Image 1 (cartoon, rainbow, N blue to C red):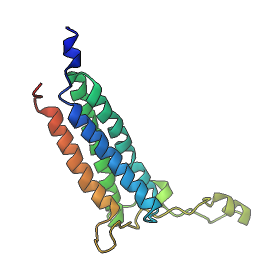
Image 2 (cartoon, one colour; image 1 turned 90 degrees about the vertical axis):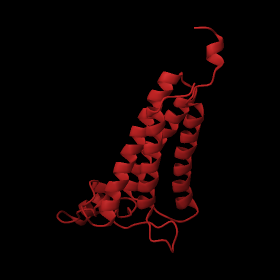
Image 3 (cartoon, rainbow, N blue to C red; image 1 turned 30 degrees about the horizontal axis):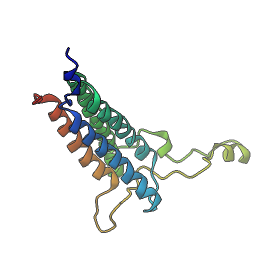
Length: 170
């Protein structure tokens, strides 16, 4: 392979960088809503952030890898964000009380039985926010953070899947 072919930018460079920025932006909004908005994340909220961390790394990989590997990174990025959409859908279902949370951290601790010291030892150090209590970023908009995440993750996943499937121009 001639050296000049290495200088040609991957057709996934722009898409990979945009995906990394979008993933980092989602994480930044979640962090800012905690720090500046006073929102407290529940256990499911924290789990929903992992696919975006993975997506940011895969987006950067897609931007700087050769075209075939960049395409594979975009496909993995789409799968990662789709997994995030599944987590968000589970969270929305918990918020609407369609099903209980699959995480034990979302349930109240069982404090029956044993001595007072044993009961105190089983209590969490910091109270957790219940997963079925929605957090609203915009007070007058009745759309929870989990619902916004579900919509964003679906659009993000399907757009990156389309980019990975389509034939690159370069």
